[in-house]
Every structure is written in structure tokens, then in C-alpha cells.
Length: 200
Image 1: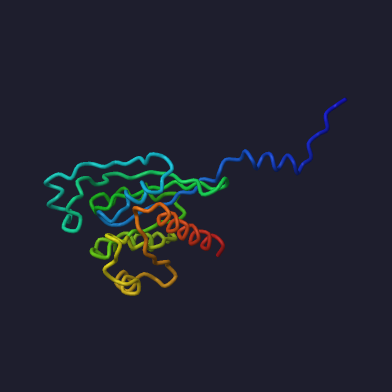
Image 2: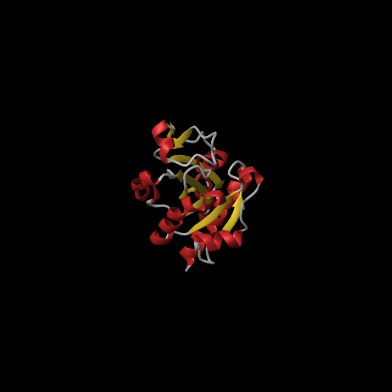
């Protein structure tokens, strides 16, 4: 007696059960010392890959350490981590270097990304213009996340939006780069932006 052939519906269900999650690339960007490496490390389900190098005396003379005096390393290439949202979706996170002198790497890092999270330190808004301008110029969906250093921000969100000249359609939120749940919520906002762009 031959075994009964599985139904088409059963076959589809079995295939769906073993199908790997859809890979989605997101970029975490911003100025020097705003919390990009911290954010990727907080959320990544694997040990994050970082390209941290010691800040030399020469670099210290170029990079503003006044608001991050305890910072001893800096990203010189990129950060990498990943996060499985659910069985159907996996995020691959690429953090950019913050210094302008490493800006030549951004095009390669951002290629293929569906969206970006621009992290802002309200104590140094000038350092964040380049990242905002980059995503606007490339027309890549993004959200702006104000990192709450010491649990507070120096300016309210309306002031930050005005200072950065960010369009009303760009989400602007406060988050804590050290808190996994806070980083997750910020990344989900970016995903919503990317989905909205894809549907329109």
C-alpha cells in the first residue's frame, strides 16, 4: 500500500516552517561618540563585530572628546551585529564610523540597506548634520534617535527637528543606546519607514 501523498497545503506549510528568515540590512549612523557601537552591541544577538581602535594623541587633537572624556576607542571601519525579529525576518546592522575623514566608506556600508537610524547627541548637534544630509541625499528612509546620555537630553524634540532641518515625515524619537528594548523600538520605527516607502 502506497503512503498517502501530502496535501499541497501541507507541503507549503512545511516549506514555510524551514524557510530561512528574510535578511534585511539597516545602517546605524551618526557623528563621533554618539552611541552607534553601543547601540549595535546592546541589541545584537551575536557578539558584535567591531573595528575599534585606540584614540591616539593625534586623533584626540582632531576629534572632540570634551563630551566623552572617558572614550578611549573609536570605530575606524564599521560595526556589525544581527537581530532576529521573528522567524520570517532577520536584521543585519551595520554601524558607520562617525568621523568625517572616514566618510569615503559610507557608500559601501550603506549599499543595499533599506533604511537607517541616525543617532544624535543633543550636546553636539553639529556632528549630526552630515549623517542626516547623507540619508536625505540618497533618499534612504531613516529615523532620528536622540540618545539620552545620563538619562536626559539637552533640547526637546521640536528644537532638535528645527535645528537639524528634518522633514516632518521623518520620525524623531528619544532612546537609550544602552537599553536593548529601547534600541529595538527605534529599529522597528526605521523598518516601518522602509515599509511605508516600499508601499508608496
